[in-house]
Image 1: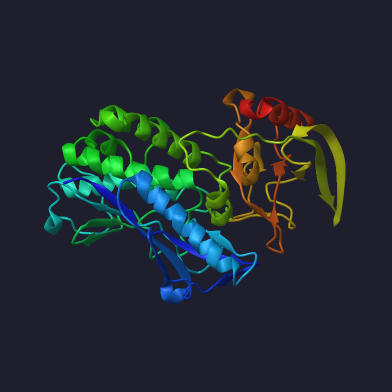
Image 2 (image 1 turned 60 degrees about the vertical axis):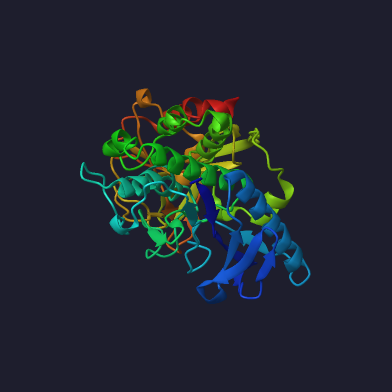
Amino acid sequence: MTIQIGCDPEFLLIKGNNTINCSSVYKETASGGIGSDHNGRVGELRPKHGHPKNVTKNICSLIHTLKSDLEQRERNVKMIGGGGAGKSHDSIGGHIHISGLNNFNYSCCDCGYKEFSTTSSNEDKLILALDFFIGRRMTRIPGGKRASSNYGKPSDVRQQNWGIEYRTPPSWLCEPKLTESTLALAYLIAQIWSENPTIFDELLSQRVMARKMDYGKLTLISRNNVENEYFTTQIDNFKKIVFDKTYHMSEMNCFDSWTTSILSNTTEITSIELKFCQIKIVNYQDSIESEMVSKICQFVTTEVKVYVCNGIYAPYYMRRTRTSRLRTDTIYISRELRPYLKIKREVGIHVRFINFISDERVPITNAFMFTKHNMKTDLQSVVEIIINNCVRKKLKK
């Protein structure tokens, strides 16, 4: 039998800060269907199954149809993928259907969380490989967290009479490249497994989630030389997205990315606009906050604030998400700046990237915090070291 890929990825329709009920968007087209789930709160695409390339084209056609229909009734509506957290109480997923699996014994494959062991069944090994390369990695992408803990757990698989439905990933509808590369990866994993169900054993015994270098092994062990170039390109596209710390799944409007992008296998080169940035030192004493410009440089934001603490506790106006206690000799940096900084071990400074919030639960972005208590390096040196030496090389170029 020939392996085929199908899917029913979910999405949200959002206008302003409100979600729109999707129960009225049902439509049948030559490329498949558009419907809803979760009592109409969540939309769902049902493209025709086949090869990943064709399924992606079917999804593109469905999104164009949906956008055209909505524009006749509603203006300024966004279509959102990701996991749904922060956008809705409903979890949205990117369910992947796989049919044509050789030697797949349905009666042996019980659903639920799985761990690899020497006694794992061949069916379990396929599910674990999907978790390893797709499911666990995608939930780590910003915006990929599912809104409900009841959905999207590792090894979330439902058996069907035609094959299996893999339900762990968040909705990968964000853009064509993520969609096609995800489907292509699932297709390739299933194809490799059908030829040799134990071929992933070594990787699965080492860790539960793929590292960047592990994806290259997929093309090396694939015996399908006819489409090797296609799958190599799709794996590269997948890696570029899931390991890009600036990528945010739920912030992308699918209508824009699918109706303005051309479906192709080429990789787009993106650039970051640098701005004149003021680095300000912020002191807080006796309920008075004072700021002083310490340095002006080129960076990705116009302002970075460095908050000074005189003890091991953060000021009352600025707290960490879990606890206000700080480690000595450690610089705390807003998680938003992480994609642009790579702290080198040789600089001799302990660094942690965390989320800051004020007492009003307002996020504080583009901020550093450090405590003077036992600090071995003076403040000016800290600023110089981080900004001059730890900005990523790609950003400097």
